[in-house]
Image 1: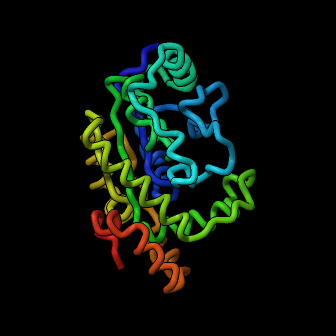
Image 2 (image 1 turned 135 degrees about the vertical axis):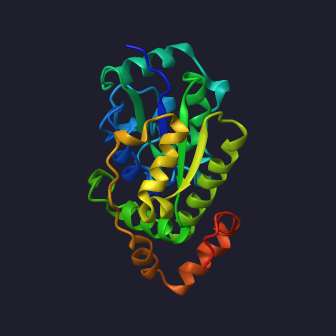
Length: 248
């Protein structure tokens, strides 16, 4: 079975990669694994969190030195064949592969070397809401209880959001089939945003059921922040917040 024009989704953790991935997997012409790449057994180190649990949701923070950042210079044929074998195990006949992993933000250039005809979609979300979620979910995430107890400051979370999205923007220079969408557009206008993604990827609009999303999660999460925390996020992540129009 051949993997033709696969689709890779990425973005800073808590930015909506999961809801976007689930929505796209409903498309009749798409299939793929039911788990994120780093959780698939047999993945090469270049495609997983090989530094351990401490990097969970904080992989772009300077203290880890962008250790997961790889480019086309890191290509090797053995990993290419291993990836193709792993992905084919979950690929339904006649469909295109769709996978997601937030940390693929740092791997997209290498992935393009592995799959030259790949399509990429990055999703960006309000940095204040994301920073709150990173702190809370590193402490305890009901979907990933194995990572509990990772104490994180709001400053660290803001740094993660900022640096992850610097890389997201930088990929506009390197990735051929690349689209950046905003979480807010997805949840407020799901049909318009999903159709934009389908058009980008060359997929039929008629083959997907458009879901409804909860629209007030940003407000809920930002309301949990103190003024001091908001000020810290603005100070650290200001350039990217302004770039995407998120400064409060």
